[in-house]
Amino acid sequence: MIHIGRRLPPLPAPTRTQPDWVQADPRFIERASERAQAREGGGWCVLDASHRIGSTPRRFQVEGEAYVVYRGESGRVVVAPNACPHMGAELHEGRVEGDQVLCPWHGLALGPEGRGTWQCIPAHDDGALVWARLIRGERPTERPITNPRPEAWIGGVIRQEARCEAEDIVANRLDPWHGTHYHPHSFATLRVTEKSLDRLAVRVAYRALGALVVEVDCTFHAPTRRSIVMTITGGDGESSVVETHATPMGPGRAAVIEATLATSDRRGFGLAQKAAPLLRPFIERRAARLWVEDVAYAERRYAMRQKARRHLQLAAE
Ligand code: FES
Ligand SMILES: [Fe+2]
Image (spheres, protein in one colour):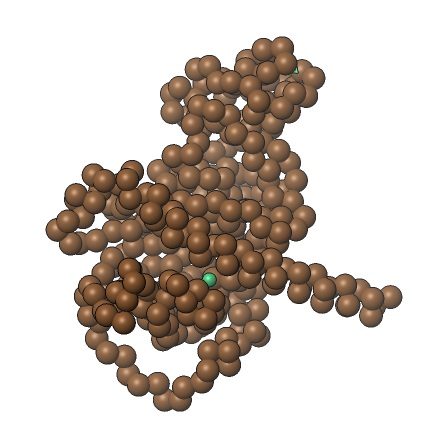
């Protein structure tokens, strides 16, 4: 293992070292997850990366309902029910003209002005992600509840779907102890340096290339019930963030949308910013690889929770 990048001050030796499986206390993770679930969501959820919402209408499912999403000519993101108010055709199969979508069956033009019961839903493009206020039963906020981001970043966004609930995706991130065991290809060493129900701090050496590793300090916290943010607090890339968002699609279905927004105070960063579109696939490939495993983790957690729920139901009958 060869360390590259900035060296971090050594950590005090742990008073007592317990194996990771002992440190990963399921009751703690459960409590931290409950704490995250109690936070506000403002009714907003993330749909996908800003750069993937364009003039081709797309279909998204949130809490069992289907929506059409596209970017109009003016740059405005439109989110609306996917069923045409005329005879119910699926609008994502239509095409965009100006800021309107033309229904594929009889050509009705629908757009931001709405038509009868067919009305657009508040949407927000924050430059990295597109959000919509689609979650029912929450106190709505004017804008999504977001976390500070670096001023200048290069990044990528991945989106994957999973057979679990949004809370299983957040809970996966509240268990950093699985890092080196479950993702040995990405993490060489990992030590949890601070642990509270609101914040976890970790020193991690991630594999940059082959035997080359970069060591950073980072924190995890959940600003809302559907998101968890990793912030680099020391080492190379300080202030970079990885935002993981979970969007409920329907019973037992959720999407994970993760934005990696990397920054650096190194001289070459300006150049890297110019090459941002070229770097994006690399960043996205790396994040996607981790999420293949983390989706399996979240799905397994969900399956175990379902099983426990069934046992409880049977016991109560
Ligand atoms: S179903 Fe859309 S115009 Fe007829
Ligand atoms: Fe993981």
